[in-house]
Amino acid sequence: MKLEAKQNTASGAKRKAAEQKTLDERFVYKDDDVIDKAFDWKQFTRLFSYMKPYAKQMLPLVSIMMILGTITKLTVPFLTSLAIDRAIAPKVGNPSLTLLYSLTAGVIVLYLIQWIAGVYRIKYTNIIGQRVIYDLRSDLFKHIQKLSFNFFDKRPAGSVLVRVTNDINSLQDLFTNGVVNLMIDCVQLLGITIILLLINWKLGLAVMVTVPIMFFISTKLRQKIRIAWQDVRMKNSRINSHLNESIQGIRVTQAYTQERENMNYFDFMNTDSKKSWNKASAMNQAFGPMIEITGGFGTMILFWLGAYLIQSGELTVGLLVAFSSYVSNFWDPINRLGQMYNQLLVAMASSERIFEYLDEQPSVQDNPGAKPLGTIRGDINFNKVVFEYEKGRAALKGIDLDVKAGQSIALVGHTGSGKSTIINLIGRFYDIKSGRITIDGEDIREVTLDSLRRQIGIVLQDTFIFSGTIRDNIRFGRLDATDEEVENAAKAVDAHDFIMKLPGGYETEVEERGSALSMGQRQLLSFARALLANPRILILDEATASIDTETELKIQEALKILLQGRTSFIVAHRLSTIRHADKIVVLDHGEIKEEGTHRELTSRDGVYNGLIEAQFRFL
Image 1 (cartoon, rainbow, N blue to C red):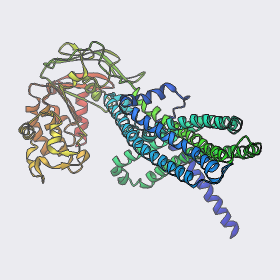
Image 2 (image 1 turned 180 degrees about the horizontal axis):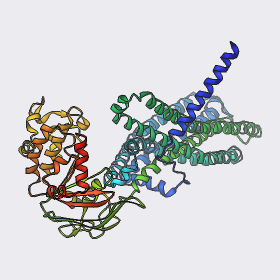
Image 3 (image 1 turned 120 degrees about the vertical axis):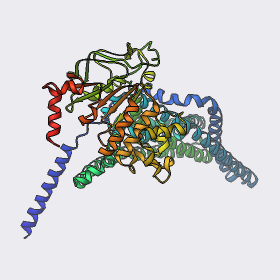
Image 4 (image 1 turned 180 degrees about the vertical axis):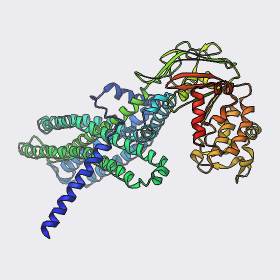
């Protein structure tokens, strides 16, 4: 029995090890590599440049409070030495209670001044710190809004989210306390060093012999600590990314009963994050004991040499007590500077990740000399357009397409044929590799992005509903629209009736992504939003794919109004929805295979006919 139990235990251990290895191999992260660089002083300067706008306003006051607090702190040991040598145990005469009371009162006053200076210093440094964090977060968010589609194609939403939240938040303590504390400690160290040397230069030099040892230790650890904290930030980013993905995909997870697999995935990431944190934290905690041990050697030197100097008459008992107090105050800022350096390393790990995004330039942006695009008619021309998502893999291969203003163009083809790519290029969400795309004869690369995209409306299959009211979601198409215009747009696409049946009508609050609405209702809102924007070019990307047949019939009537006088591109797999298009373009593997009306294409034995037959085969 014992042998069998041992075998089962061994078997269980092997199985557990094998499962862990499988997890290790499966959950290989492709996002956010550790940024392994030397300490970058340019980046350090760049980070603290965010304090410049507020330094002139508040730094003088903060500096006064800082210097006042430091002076009062350094004066207390001196008064203590006077109390011992002149009031408690004077060399000549009797103890003086009057002097002792006066010195005691002086110490109390100094502590009171120190407390008041500290209160105001903390108040104003917190104000500066929060304003800096506000500016940094605002700059990062604004910059992310400008980045191109290919940036988001390569990164999970959670990874982007953690840069704006966690990484920014990790800098708060540095800006609210760290910078000023660093200045205080440096001034305090300078002041204590001068005082120690003035009291007795021999004893001062003997005690400070341990300082180089401390800096040697910190120098050896700093690189490892910086990389360790970078790793922590990276692991936290991955957890946030997975959480976002898990919440968005919870219905799929439960539908396929993959909860346990998902929990294993999260447990693996969570454990990995915990190990990284423990490692970085252990390195941080190593500073304190090392400095305390080194400080202990300094204290031994102090009392050994101090006793000798008292016996030789070079030092009094009061001065030795004061010296001891100053030495104690000397080690404290040294210890805090070590912790501050660790804090700075953590901040540098986060700032490197933040500046990595801030330095990311949009792959699509206004060219030098780009001019605003005036009100367009809607003539669109693709001339030998070649496009690649990845180098060497062409998604479009020399596309030639001419569209007249007001025409409706249907794009059909198998998945991956290039339909969505074409409509993304019209709005210049990506830049083409070669060729030319023009609108009313203007190359879209020579006009500003804002003026181009303002004249394009897009309705997607998976339409996005924002948190807020129904009215606000429709008005997103044109923010200056009146309530009447919003309601008229809803009526035009037959959304008014279902909206009025909701508890609050147009003022009904909907959650993010409109989870309380049906897929068809969300799509109707997106149609109303597009109609309100009144674009010259309208793009419908599988916009009716999620609408039932009855609703689709209503939509078809609304589309006649919506498409009238506008150049439109319709992407649809359901071919019955595009039979009335002015031109149908059949794509296959990034090439145009056929063009024509529904009647013209069905009269041929081509690709379009094959698509129709395939659909009827599955009806």
